Length: 139
Image (cartoon, rainbow, N blue to C red):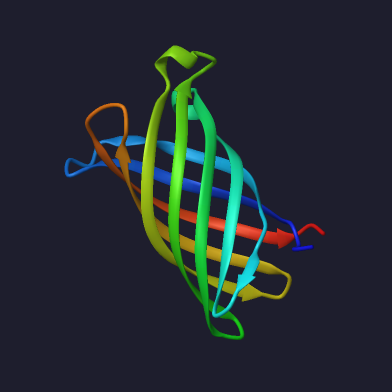
């Protein structure tokens, strides 16, 4: 059985090409790295929250990770995000994202900065999300 990792992170989200601030989102997630030589496929699911705009939702992602050295890996990321104001499901938006980053192993913690470009699926718009993720193996 593959190990389960706990993840916490923060993402600054803004529109492109006009850099309108969409919010700072915190999230918690669980991921399960699956070895598929020469890469790891890492599916994940989590919850996001943006207190400043009272928004939140669910995120689902898959990362393809390629080891570059014992402490460094390159990441290709595909994400699907559901976001809504408060508990108003009728005002939900959905976005599909693709991005890249690196994962740096520091002892028992993996630090992963990344950048993802999102396209809103149910309306016009693009956004960028620079993200910092911290992961630790739970079991």
